[in-house]
Image (cartoon, rainbow, N blue to C red; front, side, top):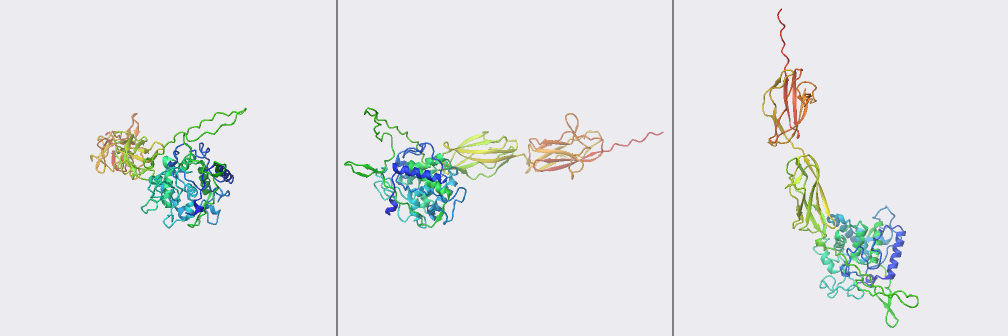
Length: 569
């Protein structure tokens, strides 16, 4: 490995001050850096919120050293303008090698498909790739995105770095004694064993491939139900990668810089990191000094308190006790972390009132690695006023997902009230994932309606029609129960406006009615109320129309009054 690539700065007080000053200068140049969350602005190894902190070998990189170069103080673009600048625009630092940039953007798309709630920005991957490997040594990758030689960190042997004994037999890092960070995104082998991905489809999970490494980093950052559009979650994600506040500041600086604008440059032509500063030396016996790497993250009970300030009169204050660091909350393994909840092929949800829906609501759960997640409780809830319920009369049911990640709700039984409602599927506890399906209940329908007899309907003026009218509605040949039917008396069926004279029904007060809303009974039968004739003779029509469009026209006749011969003189 080239010496100028592998010279990487350990985290120390001097560099922290430099990084903080540069971040402040970057902010003054209007770079859009989101604020560090409370709890991540303190000491060098403080973890934000404690979600992903823990022993240093829990970090993705094993807290290996990293490049501390900061972006230029002149940002590549101004607020509100393009984030994909031409190569001639902006500084060289804004250029990202083509294959490396493609890998970051592909990882963003892939994660958006399996865990959209994470809202992973590719610029965050670019920021981490910058400080971890200088964008894979300036884009020195082959056509498949693999570095020609492995990018290896120093042996994590506890001598200035974390102590992590070998976990892979040297398979990834060539070291059978201690682990080393590997590849463009600097994963230690034990982390790669859990999070490794095959993003370029070659059948291998290769930490030295930029496509595989970028997707693995994206999924790792999204672990624990994080939403990276939230500043606190983004800070926790970065600190889980390397538990150093200085590291967080550096990544944040590049993240803000890349958000302002980037451009693509040819592979192999990216800007390489410059020579880092020298670590702060520490005194050695005999009065000489030698370079001393900065300390590993403090652990409870692992630091010695320094003497307090002298008291007046030559005394000294009692030695303060170190404040114990609370144990971190463990991040669930990715295989046990819900990543997404997606539609498993549910079709349109529509049924006639009182009927059973043909479709059943089905979802598929995937873990943080994108694999199907089995035995996950998924709760389905019906919301609305149609009276629709799951089979068994329940509005809420819980189902465990199967081996393929699918969970299917029981059949839905439509209520009697037409209208729209929703079915919501919910899974997960830390940050639940939900899917909502629109559904509807349509009114009962009939595609045919006929009279059950064919008697002529005749009445004298002012009299009641003697014969009752009975009809039957059917749908696809079966009796159509509960179907709404509108009965209207008209003068001409071709112009079905309500008549103002002729036959009529009567309301409760005995007043004429010429339009009625009726409903078929359980056998699809409809018996009309009594019909009455008024003093206007003629031929009239009764039009009956069902929900569903079936129509029947019945003729009504009001006979003229018989003329009486005058008495003979």
